[in-house]
Amino acid sequence: MVVNLIDKNYVEITGPKEVTGIKRRKVNIEHLVPLEKAIKIRKGATDKMVVTALRRSKLIEFMGGKDVGGSEEIPEDEEADSS
Image 1 (cartoon, rainbow, N blue to C red):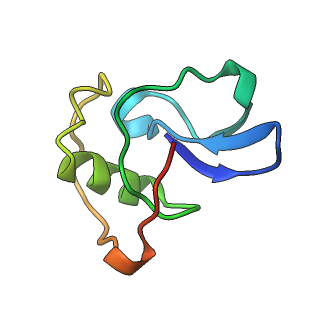
Image 2 (cartoon, rainbow, N blue to C red; image 1 turned 60 degrees about the vertical axis):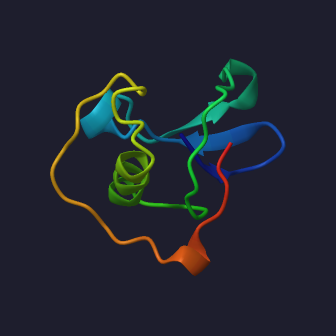
């Protein structure tokens, strides 16, 4: 999941690690493969917020991960598309 645009070449991504094993890190956009699925999260969303959005969208299994405990409320007015 892309959680933040750093500049024209880099973004910050997360799996989140607890779900997919992919830790939060900076990556070059040339290394990303776009998927046809998307979730709504706000810029800079925490891993807990991403897990909650994945659960809400029923995409935990699609991401190849496992559901983990805990969730963080995502105020609807703070949600934004993540690509």
